[in-house]
Image (cartoon, rainbow, N blue to C red; front, side):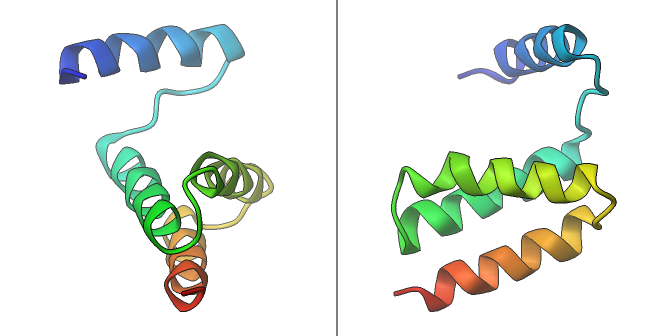
Length: 78
């Protein structure tokens, strides 16, 4: 997927649900977490863990700290 397609999609999806488009740091954090979970736990766990991250951040958790904790859990899951 090209960056242009991804950015267009994120703009459209964010507008549809009434949230801000994630910045580059947030996108990187979510993608890194998804990679850690997919490679160390199970591929279906990647989007589900990203959902958990989003819920936690929506409730006030720090995105980077929460991503780091979930990544630590995933890499220990082997």
